[in-house]
Image (cartoon, rainbow, N blue to C red; front, side, top):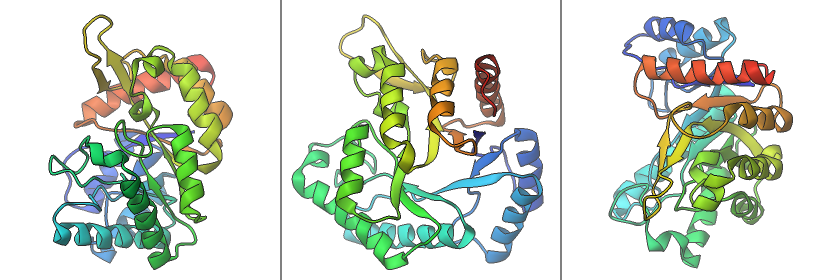
Length: 280
């Protein structure tokens, strides 16, 4: 697998970003550009990745297609199409977003409307609209699973793939986001095996992190954290991934803020991989 993440640190030029890339040790990265970036800068950043044998694994949308403000929702839709078009042009396999929510509480909020049948229909229709407008041949549009938003489990993701019915709609794997109840938390390897076993043929990119839950405090609170700061046994997790994913599958650390945090998480995962006999 290609272990990587988002290159952290301050930079203003492609050369400065390349220097950070080299010391990150990453072999897969999130795109350091978007569809609004100048073409010359995009080309320079892509050449930097090529020089060091680094794959640009995914490009994010991270906009709310169902924003309660129609103008913002329309802008999000156009940005999603622009990101998918750029991904296809650049050969980036995964253009990823979340489904979206009509909640006024935030773009990724838990809301009762998230699970209404009409919302599900909107999700299917929005994905089709993006793919049909762009008609990509190399990139896929994907949704990152969320704890309180479709898709929130492997079966739900498979059903969504069937309902969207577009070959360029694929899966983005984030098993920690789907560990959204004590049952999954207390038997994580079995659940992670289920996720990859059911979705492996559709997965274009994978996020890795960790999770923790206070064992006696009521009610349940599950917290995302960096690998090594939670309870996941990464030797076991990496063995599952190594068995079920292609050898060049991108696996990305996420949601850290500093270079030092990414470096510590990388060290933890790389050490677990070495103990497990998994090549990264």
